[in-house]
Image (cartoon, rainbow, N blue to C red; front, side, top):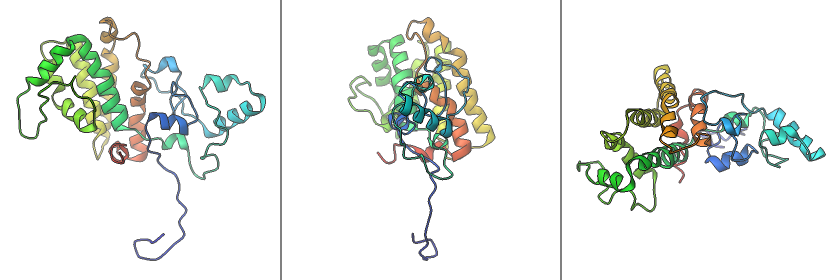
Amino acid sequence: MVCTDRFIRRVHPILAAYVANFPEQCLVACNKESHCPCCLVKSQDHGDLDECPCHSMVDMLKTLQRKRKNKQSKKFNKEGLCKVYEPFWKELPFTNIFACITPDILHQLHKGIFHDHLVQWCISILGEKEMDARFQAVSQYPGLCHFKKGISAVSQWTGREHREMERVFVGLLSSVAEESVLVIACSLLNFIYYAQFQQHTDKTLAAMQDSLGLFHMHKDIIMELGIREHFNVPKIHSLIHYVSSIQALGSADGYNTEYPE
């Protein structure tokens, strides 16, 4: 490669971060999409706040080889692995593929946590017509997107639309949603905004973790209202790994899949 001083040198790159959406992350981690590509959490425990041990490359390779030879392995089924016996990262030096998987702000937060979960929960509470009416009633302001037809008429969502909705969403719920629902909305949106910081300190990471803890403290109201039966959702579980990933690899904003898309 041509270096900054214009000399040509032989370079040996080391894989440190792998940017991908959730299905691709699971494909790289050789596990099913009902399991976490980073840790050994059970599929029925995705809704808990407890952290689990991370995957081990050595243990996974041994399990895959044992499955390849014996065709029966309780550990293979328990960890939700797939029959990828020769993963590309098998012989990469100085690499832990499970520590390389980065947060995905676009698919996990904007499209996942916010649009697929929080917005749908609130629509179940308010009703689609009332939600559209509240978006239509938002005052127009320079630089603020105005959904004059509501949000039900939007056919294709992008990261921009999600960000514009997030700017006014808590205000729309005022006076119609229970206090616990407002707390859930505020905590998740605070988490999403903290995750987009380009620089972090111990204080911002602690605030980010507190926002996640606040959501888990009040999430039961969603089940009490009959909107959901459980929170065993991979994208909800993925929030647990954000702080540790930022500490290891830097701000999540640098790994957003929205940039290449």
